Length: 536
Image (cartoon, rainbow, N blue to C red; front, side, top):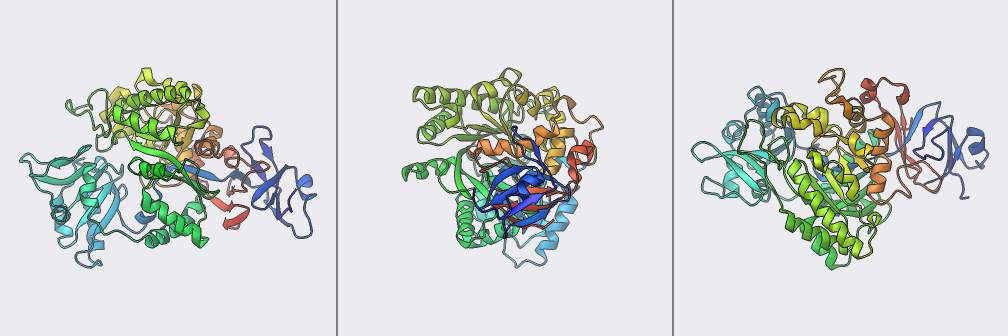
């Protein structure tokens, strides 16, 4: 056994190891768990230089991993105009005006998180409204889903967009009754403006990530699966070179960049224990908020709106099969039931190709990101095909008014991880931050209660049959992401040989009423055997 650097004892430690679920002490050395067991057993392993730390009976869990986060966007959102779920258009405009007053004319104003469906009139905002408070600054504010953006006239002019502009493939420019642009962009149309925003240096992005890292550690995250593009990967590498990376990062590769990775011979998993390549990321459709999720049947009250198909099934299958042959699984964003249906067909075809090539299912851990609404005949196919459900439990209580309004009775099949677990599917949980706050215990609370933190929509929660147990919710933040990233041999559990990544909680969560789970705070976070938040 390696030298024991420290022994944590007198704890209430939940290991997530089914062979030894609960222990009171851990022996740690060289960044890993060396042994687990009772206090006297672990303290007997201590040497003259071993630190002995009394946990004072506190709950301990493995470090948590957010399996779907936009890390660059999350980090930069901490610097932008905060319009996250503001209660009114007027409040959003007030915040933009406040930032404009202290920003040099001509510089971009950026923000995230507005939701028109929580505003009194539920109407989309307009460029003219932004013009009134930011006449000399181009402005772009993405909605909460990230699938719509609100821009002003200055931004439209810079992008060369006007009434004569055509909708791009996979996106649309919202127009008024006279055909004029309103200032709201959907899906790929956002890129028409975003490409004109000055590019931050990789060092600037790394600095923003470094600041955001401490917030992640403070809420119990020791790992993330990042879905942003190449600048995010470059910035993460800079942090690694500086010795400042304090999260374990599985970095997804957007499909438009996969060819470059394949050309130089990279395969999924390339990297080290701190930063490695994950799956190919593909978009099949949009989102519920802007009603661009791709649907079998039209949205309630919008008989001509079936959402937006961002990539057709034939192209998607070609990309998945090509990447699989070269060593990459695929993670495909699918929210609407038609998008989910098409993605399952794609993965079914890929499994046949893989089987013919002698590739086992474990060798290509394909994922559906979000899996929000599933057509009833498709429900068992996730487990049957062997696809990981990478989901966000917080979406259920967050989105239920929208789901009820636009999906109607179909909502009984929405955001249902319960059924997928019962059918044997593997699941991994995330927040899609900055779409939702990167706070695991708000997500765990949502999974267990199907409620918002204020208790809505009522004491039973939204479609309460889909509730999870606390153990299942914790597994979705520990073992689930570890398996999805191919790291189940070293992450997601507290057992000998695994990374010494753990969190110390301020309360005994297994004794808490479920409605109070979101109040859980992190007293200390350990990563690789060192305290990086705390100490407790």
